[in-house]
Length: 75
Image (cartoon, rainbow, N blue to C red):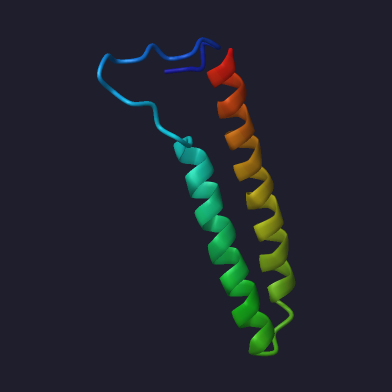
């Protein structure tokens, strides 16, 4: 249930996933936030600033999870 700090054991015959699932979710949120920011700014709303901040946060999360996966893969 919790994170034990150990890498999960690989199942024979199963290929490793190229990117962790949380990184994909964060990347999807980033893309959607950028689209929402563009739509907000085009419609003349300053609410797009909030969407830009959310895009920055989610891109940092995606970068973190991708980097963490690479570090645990090499260890």
